[in-house]
Amino acid sequence: MERSLSCEEVLLRLDDYLDRELSADEMALVAAHLADCAVCASEQRFEAGVLASIKDKLRRVRMSDTMRAQILARLRHPDSP
Amino acid sequence: MTVGQTPTTKPPQPADIEALLTPLLDAAYGTALHLTREPADAEDLVQEAVLLAVRGFKSFEPGTNFKAWFFRIMVNAFYSKYRKQKRQGTQVELEDAPELYLYNQTDAIGLHSRVEDPASSLMNKLDTESVSAAIAALPEEYRMVATLYFMQDLSYQEIATMLEIPVGTVRSRLHRARRLLQQALWKVAEDRGIVRALADAAREPA
Image (cartoon, rainbow over all chains, first blue to last red; front, side):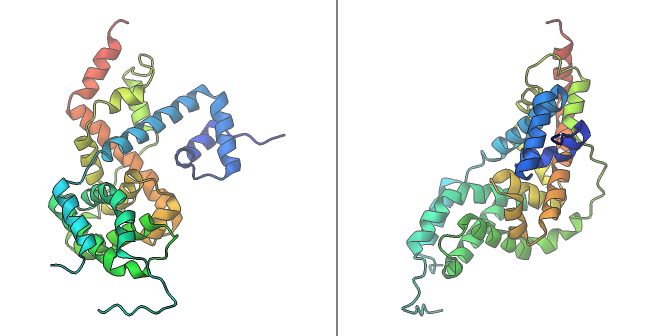
């Protein structure tokens, strides 16, 4: 019979699962559990939503046009003062 | 230093680094901002990293991961320039950081039974500044890993290579940083009345 994971075992792997840092076998085991367990699936959706939102907000930071121009100038003329 | 190219090697050309670096500039600045926590320092750090990258570009092997190569230069520049003066801030007493903190808190105020997507209900009320401040408040070793993770799509192994630490250390620091961040974000939400507003909304009749 194929191995399956308990809710506790899934929780231990949740961060790695969200980051796709588990082996293919383990990814499949967690996915199989999430397909069957509404509570773990809701936890997984929540955690994924929080992570995506943090990434989205932090990545809105933009370099100023002045600084971008200075850097491009430096790339073209690296030895100028 | 004069450029003494041997005829057998074809070093990367300055035009190559411009093409490789330009798409990374916003991420470089954002990363530098979270590492240094000061816009002026972040600009200096990016400028310095760019200069070091230009000067060291001959050592970049074409076809390998330029992003990892460049950010490693920036991380090293950060360590050598800023770490000494801020080192005293790193030994922070860490409170216990439980799993699923925001999930359990939002469940406790009744949000889960009222909205389809409780994570978005909470996170949409937190602005970029709040999230940045929560990252900035992390102890340095956690802030470093979390910044590289959140600002860019890097694997644990890529982060480990950049920081020259074991991948298991990246994993444990990152997981812990996420829990600390969740606690910090909930604190912000409480302080700004967001939690009370969400709880009130959850109690209203449908």
